[in-house]
Image (cartoon, rainbow, N blue to C red; front, side, top):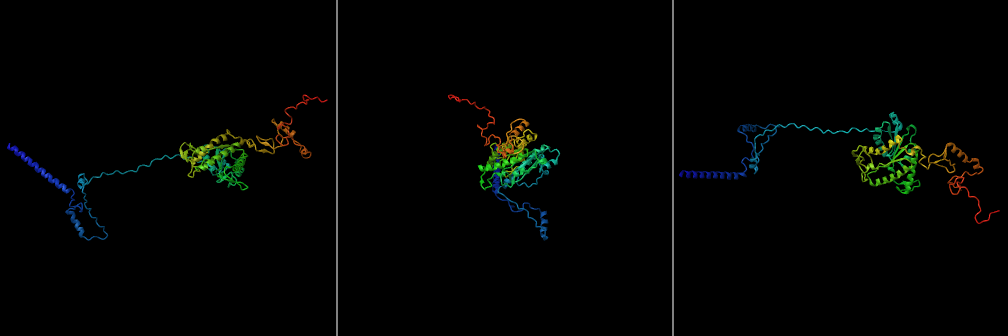
Length: 450
């Protein structure tokens, strides 16, 4: 019993001594936690005695001129949290083995699929030049008008002539051209000077009028505002004369309406102008093409980019909102291309191309044979009945008065229906009345005359 009690007392004493030593160590560590080490501010690496001797010798030697000064060893720094840094290996001075880095190769550049170069058609200066360039050229399309006509000509050369070896495009476009009087380049005079013979084109495409949307001053100096009654009268007269000059060419004619622009006010003027243009063109028997739908969205607003002829969405108009890009020019030509196939094949030939008098009743045949088509004859000329040529010639000879009897004797020429000297009643009756005269019978209730 005594031994066991002694063992227990000894164990308790040892435990108490252990706790006392641990508490002292903990107190010492806690007091040293925020105490900076003694070597703070000193070089972090102390050289050994063998290294100190060469350094002392080197300091004893005079420093050579031009030799760079030796950099001092960096001093050791200290932080209150240095024990935690040391705990997690922040003060590990062991050299670490660096893994060799593999050389980084630059990634190859991305492969961009370049679209094939689109064929760019050629616009010729004249029909003779186009036919001389290739023996296969049979059909020549002349694009005539202002600066927008030049864009249309290039679009037709890209889209229309590129797929047809027998077709060529001739461009005759000048900046500032128009139909209104006083323009720098008068398209009316240019239409009257179009080449004939071998240099004549098979189809004439007209695109102009953007320079005409402004007031007109007539010969008397009176200013006619845009789209008022006087402006319409002056402009219609000039444009009708232009169409008549094209009729004398006896060729198919396609008139293209102005495309919309970014300016909303200008686009409204263009819409009114196209309506007037279409009325005059179709009245004269020509073809009118409206390309407005190709450059506006479903709400009718101007479209800078949109679907091109290849189905892709592309930029159609230039930055100024008026011109066309190459894709836009091809889309503009698409509307004309639909008509050219039928015209060149003879399937959709307007009546104006056959005979200019057939669709313009205002033409008056002063001399020559019988009137052609719907042309009117000058008042006083004999009216020829329908029939064969011999019958018509005989009727003309019978109705023709002798010049001597008219000039010397004063013989009146035969009456013509509608003329002021036609006194027949009711008006329009032939020389021999269709209804015979009533018999002369006494009226009822009267005595007969002896």
